[in-house]
Amino acid sequence: MSTRQQVLMLWLASSSLEGHVLGWSFFDGSSGAGPQLTADPPYGTGVDALRDGWRLMQMSPLNPPVPGHERETSFLKHEFVFERLVEI
Amino acid sequence: MVTPNLLTTDQMASFVARGFLRLEAVVPDDVNRQAIEELPGLFRAWLDEFRGASAKQQRDVHHTSDDESPLPRSGTPLQTAYAPDSPFGRMVRVPAISGAIASLVGANPVVDHHFVHIKTAGDLHAQGLHCDAIVDEGLAFDIQLFWFPHDVAPREGGTRFVPGSHLRRVNMDDVSRYQHLAGEEYFAGPAGTVVIFHQGLWHAGAPNHGSRDRVMGKLRLNPTVPQVRLWDTSDLAERNRADDHMFARTEPGLVAAELRRFERWYEPAVHRLETVQRARLWRYLTGDQRFDVDWYLTRTERRAALAPQ
Image (cartoon, rainbow over all chains, first blue to last red; front, side, top):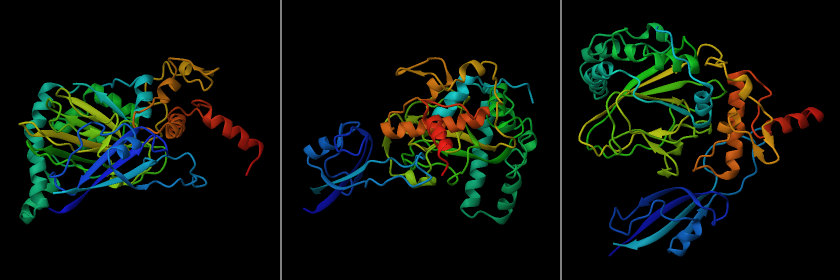
């Protein structure tokens, strides 16, 4: 048996983990040997992912707008990165 | 060129809001058949060069396709870029296509580049999400025609794209980490469909689970004139109000109604900023610097006029 990391990225509707899921990505260090995501989207909110055992690793900081660029849009703002370790 | 069928105000507003316009099965079957026969050869010649084929082949592919039609250099006027009997030459002369081109980038754009994308049957690689070129400054925009000359069924390699992503300032594949976004689309549709993208629209080549190669011809065009009121504007004046917001109600049928369209992957707070970006683009397209959606630009401009920085 060895341990592998699975990473789940969620983009939420607000800066709160209770925000609903707008987008998601899954990167699987187990190459398919570990449990997979089944629903589409996999969770309704960030808190739902916590309840299913995912550990939060990182969330987007809340940066004030850059002066002169307050109205520009770019990447999705509220990114949450989770991990879980699986045995294969 | 044949007299074009100009776009409507509704189509233009939808393009501004969503970043694409879908023209369903507008290219005739015989033109599509010619494309299916000739375009893959163009792709293979490029692939041979890419893989280091002979010097003669490399020279040839710079100047001719399989049917000996010249390949235009960047900056070639569209009117003269393609032989009238070549696949791309025939496609851009279809009235629905020439009308859309004239409406969006004027009747005399220049060719930026074109390419043939083939997603072979069983190729399950999902390309990373990206926009083409780099971060493009300013309101003026290019268009990209995605021409699907044969039927594309769901899951058979139709291009993935994200409605409403075109005005977000990102560079190329910096958005490739987004594997799934709510409301994204994968092209599927009948032969002869052309989807016109704003240059900034996020898209990606999609897996082809089908049994036939998927062929797609892509053509990017640059405007050479200000893109102001180039479409059929006969109904614009009555629908271009900036003051349609009354006691938390809005007036249907106006341009603003389309420009406040929500996409499922938008954060609610960012949706308001997207609305501002769309209003700025609509001001450019109409020449109406008083146009607004939900008063976002107007109120700040009026305040700024009172207390200049």
